[in-house]
Length: 85
Image (tube, rainbow, N blue to C red; front, side):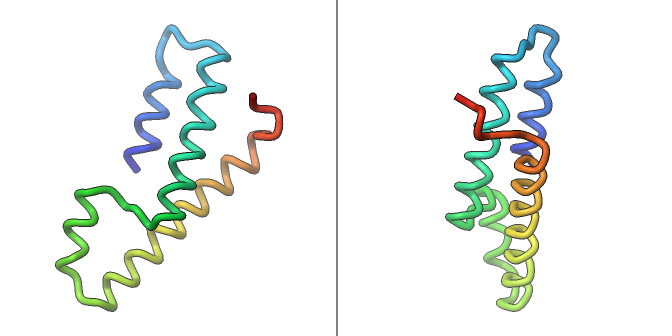
């Protein structure tokens, strides 16, 4: 998932400090939540799923939404967003 890749690359920078983490991780969570809420999969994927049959499209969308839910669940399990400013 491109969102995770961008976040991981940001977290792996040599010049990162804790204030960056407190910006990167909640931003990732917000973007994942928005994608889940609006059923957004990215422009490339949205273009390609139009070519699928209806059943395959529904299956694919369910799998993507499930991935978003699992990613959000993981972040919320391991990070205390209640303490983020």
